[in-house]
Image 1 (cartoon, rainbow, N blue to C red):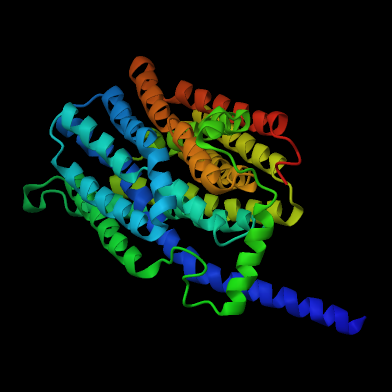
Image 2: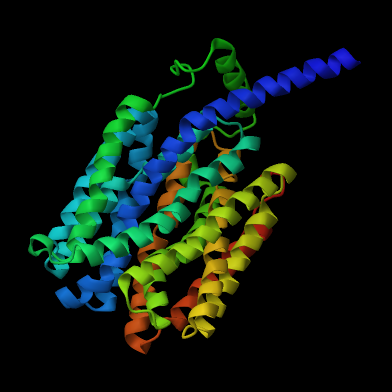
Length: 433
């Protein structure tokens, strides 16, 4: 009996060491990729603090420009992920990162409403497929029971991008304003676009397309991972593209994700403005304060994912995170003129909203396989990210109409409540485990 326990302990130890090795190899690098991606996607929220007055744009124009990114993203998301599944992640992810870095830098030349809209649309086209591609890529390396924490670690890049990106953006805009006769927001787009190009080139030399091609794994380690993944694939659904697009489960998950993304981009694109509304004026101070909610979120989202993995429970963890996000937004709107209370509420809101995302992605990846996984993940992400168009435009239009962001925050909170309720009511318990 003792020898059997020792043998089992040895197997578990080898398995844990194998996945720890994979995690140390992949996650820090993919984390870096997502940090530079997210900075390029949302740095327009900081540029807004200067460029609106420089270019005479209204909040509605800004909201539409911030959101039109997601139209291009939506149109090219599914084709991009299918191409990735055919060509391999390494080349396609590198292509995505290099093209979006170039286009993001070109945002410095925005001089009219039309050029603002066009470049934001092209940025969405360029980035389409990156996030669902990484989610798909992680299913090649991790079985479902390990994936919640891993996706959370990867997605803390959103929070980390806020932690480092917010002060960095404020510092760039303040320090470089007037250098070479360019404004601070022009330097912001240039300097934050270049890293995407450099990291994209690095992808070509660093990533492996599959477990089998990873020279840094031993044969036994490869067999361990491939055996775990193969065993899990037997329980997943293999569907055709037409079945994916007509699947009620996929559409339900898409709507749930849409409701969560409404909250995410309400925070991402408007957090600097919400902090400014409390009475903080200096862009560097705004940047430093913006880092606080993201710092809290980075810790909370990993802890919630660990709890979900440990218990195997997904639905209520996701719903509770959504409710925390909604409550934080409501309180931040009520106390919008009090910097301390607003910052506390925004920290809760950001932590709750960001925690929904890695928890959510354990659901579709637990039952989709093959082409269904590539197309289904991309479809859910693309439809969900249409909220990235609706959310900033809606908040901007409401602010222009009412001279306040409060009603916009209430609408985002309602969306989060609806999404959290749907997770519990519409997702079968068996599917969420």
